[in-house]
Length: 276
Image (tube, rainbow, N blue to C red; front, side, top):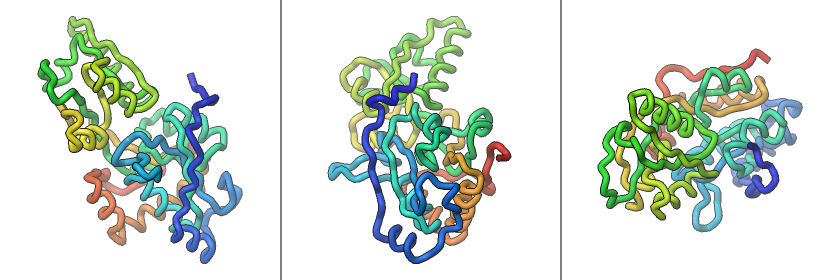
């Protein structure tokens, strides 16, 4: 259930000086009628996925996708503004006109592309994290049989966890106990506290926690799937696509992805969504 009351964590206006200068010094190709706020690209993000999107110790919103969203706004001559919100409010908020773009790496599915404009721009896969001193070895999804597993609610990871559970039961097992959390940060806290035995998350997040030495990435690279930027407006989606194409051409796209170890999809990028 979408819990808008109390769900909004905060409004973070992440407007960098270069973005302000660009918005003032050039004319945006995006019509004001295709934006929530004139002169501004309003983006939603759930900042619980280090190093892709998170709040650092100083309270600043940082990460690969934040940098990408800021650069897109700059090249569109718009001021970037980020709204920090939990994942399960993302799509309803986009459809309700609360923001222009979902900048959280929402997993692409044909069903979602019927609801909004999507630009698959990144590949992500699933990892299984355990405590560093976990006594039970997990090296494949079948080893999750009988385990209590944590996952962030409402996303691709929860869908895949349920699919694994169904497959285990289909093969004669009892399946898993799946516990959902409002964020991956809470899921990993539960793992640290021993309330769950594993966490199913995206590779980037699991790697970040493993690099810190906090948890061990037992399995990685499961179900590689494209993730996307999502937009309500087709003209805005087309304009964002042109920016991404330009970033690929000038090398800044690859530079950003390489710095964070993120894999781009093969082939040309494209907008996929309703005709209007």
